Length: 363
Ligand SMILES: [Zn+2]
Image: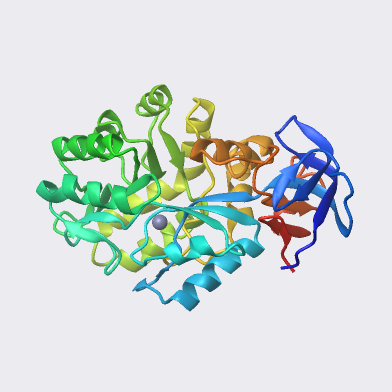
């Protein structure tokens, strides 16, 4: 990182999808629209600037087998930074990553505490594994530990059934979501299946992760209630592989996973067309690598979401949804500069020219 007294970003600054400025200045790490008086030692960065990208489903401090050490968590965060991800909604982590908040050179993290799952109904070493009568207490605990979000595992394979099934009775999630809201936290849930969705949405949930089971009959309910989805298509791409691995033992589950995968683009496009808010998330940190944000934006475009909307899902729109500023005056100068207009072709996101975090150019 290099500290200059003043940074001048010029070219095209995309403050909003239609709000384009010719330049901005960075003074004291913050965005300023006017050239500061008496600016000396000015460094110039040129190109197409976007607010720092958002990965709304990412896990820092989590690896394939559970929590990882601080060095590994730091590498994960640095990999996201290189990709232009400067704001992460951490969708559940068993590690304490609070120390990241003291580091100006690492992406900002909005935490959801640790995953809350039903006993033996999630990946080992990831979640608090509990029963429904404990749900309210655990949700309250994680709401206090996190940064305004709580993460449930809404469905998972039931090994006796040999298929995905919902993890929580309706009354338990209803009470738990009400408790989270009372504490000022929003609630999201991991859901692959169809069967878990109605209860969660009618119980007042704020967001669904993956949402592969979203069908036409439920889409209007999501739209009406403004329940967002974070599809994580780069993760859904691994479903055929998972299905192949489980084929012998759980043929019903395998077939189900394949069906969900086959219709994934239609699911996302149908939700978007109906007005369901869709955001970019990569699900990095469990089995997936960090730094895949550009790939997820490209996947949303493949699904049929217009490029500017797909961009908004990782920048302007995602930041507004999470209650964080973009490139307004006075905001922390977190931005990414590209060679060409990302609205014209989102593939440019794969190669940031410059990343600026808290006003410092990442070298
Ligand atoms: Zn995840």
